Structures are given as C-alpha cells and as structure tokens.
Image (cartoon, rainbow, N blue to C red; front, side, top):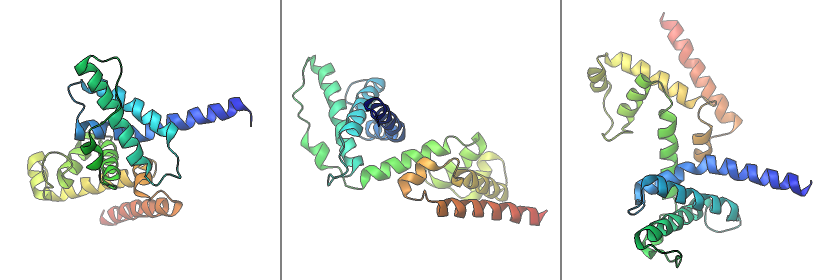
Length: 210
C-alpha cells in the first residue's frame, strides 16, 4: 500500500469518526456548558478536541475512547473559554480537576446513546415523533399514558398505540438505526434478522385484523 493510499484511508477514518461521535461534543456542551462563549464557538472548539482524540487515541489504553474523547473535548472548550474571557494568546493547559474527577466511567456512553436515540427519533414523521417523545418521556416531561397522549392529539388510545408500533418498527429497522445499534452493541446480522422479523410479524398481525 502506498503512502498516499494510507494517508487517504486515515483521513477517511477520521472523517467517519467525526461524524459518528459528533453527538459527544453536543452532549458535553449541554451537560457541562462552554463557559461564557457562544454555543457555536464551543461547538467548534469541542470538535477540534474530538478530532485530536480520534487521531491520538490508542486502543491499548486502559481508558475507553469515550472517556478519552470527553476529556479532550473538555480541554479544548475550556481553552477557548479561557482565551475569550481573559484575552490570552496562550493557555496553560490546566483544567479544573473536578471536571475530570466527576466523570463516571459509563456515563459518557449513556449520554451518547441518549443523543443518538433523540437524533433518530427526530427523523420520524412529526406525528410519530410526537407519540414517541410523549410515550417514552424523551422531552421535558415524564412518560405519558396512551389515553393522555391521545387526548392531547385528538386521537383514541388505540390509535396512539398503533402509531407507537409504527414508530418503533421504523426506529428498529436496520437501515435507520445503525448508529444507535453500534453504541448498544446490537449491530450483528442476527440482530438485523430479529428486527426485520418483528416488523414482518407486525404487518402480518395487521393484515389478519382486516
């Protein structure tokens, strides 16, 4: 393999990593904030940190990639905030210890899963999206019963149940859920066959009711 080819493959891997883990940058800003800098500036700084993490991460490390990237994102956003607030041209590189010490090992992965789920739900048609968000408490309110969601949308509880089934069938289809499946460790051929079988069973049940 030529040096140029290796370089191109490396660039592609970094680009794919940036797309796959961009939700981690958004998650950090929403959870930890970016100081006094605007969201877009914090986002840019965080993406630089993510890029550095993708390039510098060694799978042999004891820490997970998510934790490694979280700290890199934190450092770059903190640096941007320090430079803006203090007007410094350089930065010492020190980060408040409490930020790192307060990071649970599995917490970052849970945040990523939630962000990926919300992004996936956001791609549903509006009515199905409303049903899923309300039923599973993905917005600012706790999960709600079928009849309560139906009352709000002017539909029966049974119709809400059908819409919920339609939404779940769309969400679990392998063509839509790859990113979330990767995070959950459910991205095998067997997982795909199981999801497609569930969707096929739903279609058969509905045809049997007609």
